[in-house]
Amino acid sequence: MTYSEAIRFLYDLRWFGAKFGLGNTFKLAELAGNPQRRLRFIHVAGTNGKGSTCAMLESVYRAAGLRVGLFTSPHLVAFGERIQVNRRSISQSEVARLAASLRQWVEQFPAGDHPTFFEVVTVMALAYFAARQCDLVVWETGLGGRLDATNIVTPLASVITNIQYDHQKWLGETLAGIASEKAGIIKPGVPVITGAEAPEALEVIAAKARQQNAPLDLVTPADAQRPPLDSLHLPLLGRHQKANAAAAVAAVRVLAPQVPVSDSALRAGLSRVRWAGRLQLATLPSGQKLLLDGAHNIGGAEMLASALREYFPSAKPALVLGILRDKDWAAMCRILAPLAGRILLAPVHSERTAEPRALAEACRLANPQVPASEFPSLAAALADTAQDGFVAVAGSLYLIGEAMELLHLSPAKAGRERQLNEWSGGDRLKR
Image (cartoon, rainbow, N blue to C red; front, side):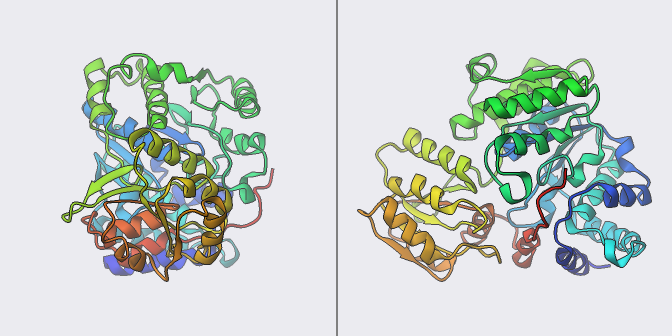
């Protein structure tokens, strides 16, 4: 199998949607020789901040001298971003090799119970990390936790960054319901670290931890002001990243008896962390400043708004906005539109995109003093910002990936690979 054939195989799996349950993943993993049994994991769930927290944990343990696997989603540009060892993406030849094996195993499933894209990629990652003999794997959930394909592992620790509203169609309409799905990653006796603050969410997480006899470590805003974070410069912008860092520090300390990390390695890892597309500030050759942020839900929009006020208090950027229609896009427009000098609405390159016209109407209601213009594509919207000194691009990680490619901010030229992020879910998770 060639790499292009492997991408086609993975692309075709999109037609099987998103199924919630662990049966297929367990079966695929068994066919692969149960690679998860040869690995150690930190399992990370939560509404926002999962990827950033994973990046911090990976950077710390790599600074400590470990070979660290990193599994995250979605990818911004190239598929290989999802599966990394010591921050090097899986090679195209390895993707092709593993896809060939997985295709053979997938063919053993009955037609009515076909594995999905995410189930296949999860096992691909496990096989790759085991083959590379990773000392530790930082393992991000896809959607939810309880029935997410990643939940076939028993980790050294479970991290739940926070609980906010997102994916209500599948996870539930209340914070307690969403917390119940995220808390599904808690395993018997395995320590849990959480930065969740909402009382109804914390109650659910604490109850699940008690039920599983799992030690629970609550991370509070005060922890973000304690050593080493009180004197450390984080490369990632935003106060919320201090909260993510506090969760990462707590996890490192909880696991210190099993996976020791020196104070110098902890500080070095946090001070060198990188994570694209999250309040990423870039300067183009023209001198134009860009802020790229995958603020894809209400919580993300609030964090972006807070960062704009904190770091750019006098700026009124040109705001390029594209949002998926299954998000609360009207509320996101109300949060972000008042901060813009002008607003450019573009479609996300996705079947799930919200229409620019609807976004424009919501933005005009939120900020009638500035123009809100609709564009047929992100490329057209970005071209229209050529004379703007400061541009913020936000609303969806899919949009950020396309922007990075269009603006040559990513070395990858993946094109079609971004479409692998497309999926359609089933009904709300069954309890």
